[in-house]
Image (cartoon, rainbow, N blue to C red; front, side):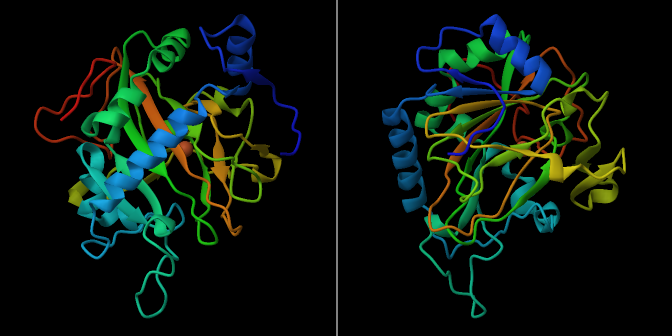
Length: 300
Ligand code: FE2
């Protein structure tokens, strides 16, 4: 781990956000809580993902997720993933003959976006009191669990994620999105940790909006501010296993490609406030009753 100037807090005996934590989140737009999740819980989540992967036939579907190409924005498999557990490969997962270069787990970009509602173990983990406590401590009076992602960032082929704000993808009016990003393995500069721009969450609105495009032509970015992000000013957010990084929805962040031989698995959960409107133009939608659930025990 390298040093950086951002404050880090001990989350191992977490009982609520302290005034210092709240001050840091307000100033920086993010908060690092080290050791918030135990090794045993990280192990359990990773093991559970293994079981989920065992039940999926990697030959059945090949959908790629890439923040560089947005090819997924035209695919129904992705567009319908709001209420499903779906599997997205890395752009470089296959060789020129179409064969996976590595095993299934080491070929995936992510699994999303409803693990927290559909899988009992992810449901229980995602609804732990500490997460509710954090959300409510940040002023989200009626936290709703909007989406979940299990991110693999596999060795050698883990793709770069370009600089973005989560609120662009999870738009509410007013903006209320927060991200809970958990390092399931040590995230370092070498294996593609998060990087971000502390303080830049205070702009009045997100710089882009990713939404359903008119005429049923998939989903894509609507630019609201054409200035490029000053990515050279990003600071690394290295995180040891068990660290929870809380992200303000307008905190600009990115992650580098993983060219190392170590994976960098993470679990990310995004919440919004049920008091806010969630416009139908959002890319992420649900089937059946079109509901977003809170911290009650929703499964199925
Ligand atoms: Fe993000």
